[in-house]
Image: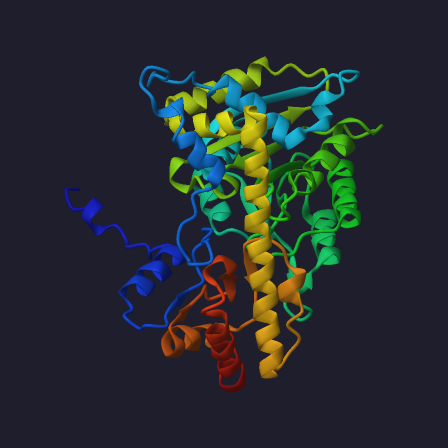
Length: 419
């Protein structure tokens, strides 16, 4: 028995972290890292948002103004109210309707997703959870660990032949395989890793199937405001689903929906782990039981969430002047990503690189699913020192005016010479 733990199999390092480690060990002067999903400025340096800088220089750090006591188990009430308002917006302003929405603080988006899986696995007990193919790799790990009794299935999302979203196959899978109370994980905007988001009309079709079949959607929203530069546009799908599930007449009452919210990307607070989980139930539902169960799960995992990051977010969102600066910060980040998308496509077209590269600009958000094969990616890594995921996904934040030409020439070469 003494040697049992020493004989555990070694699990390979997560691909994104392994890629960064390989990049850091490389001494090539023109090496480029396109793996990490972290925003960088034009000089490829971490960018502290000007709105966040102002808060850091303010009284928030002064011991005479703030303390370091534990937060309530559910989180900071002021922060949660503002986070909920950011997601649901005008829905909450409509006082003519009742709402059954409760929110708890989480360890960023990963913590919110894990808490959602724990909660639903324990109390909704779905037969299946449907995850897009492809998706953020952590979705599978989270459900495997937090809700092992729930069968993980994938729904088609990306068509490699057309380099576009495959809505028909997506809906067909739900129609054929999903049963009432099954969970469907959706990316609210800036789909990771493909960068392809449904149009408003396509979201309407997805919502109709989910409502009719009595499925439970989880929206993973890590890029509100970062994707398009518009907070309301990036929350459109969530608000549309809420209205579809809870405000339109139906013979199939919805079991509810969850929104997993991260502030890592849109505030640049990657290391502060600021997030929230919002549970919406049909109007008139009691939230007391759910709130008590969330408290129990949080108490057993982390007791309470960190305090500093949510103070930063609460300070910015509650101050009109700071909020205006923050919204300008979002537009700055979204505009830079759009600019490097345009530059990369332009360079590839200029080189006469085989294929249609228009999808690079059609996509949205930090990532692009390039369509490169695994063999081409391997050659990029080994020959050109351009590091990207084996799937061909790139983080556009790793590109700038200085290296985009080099990366385009490297892609051109591997398209010509690798299968």
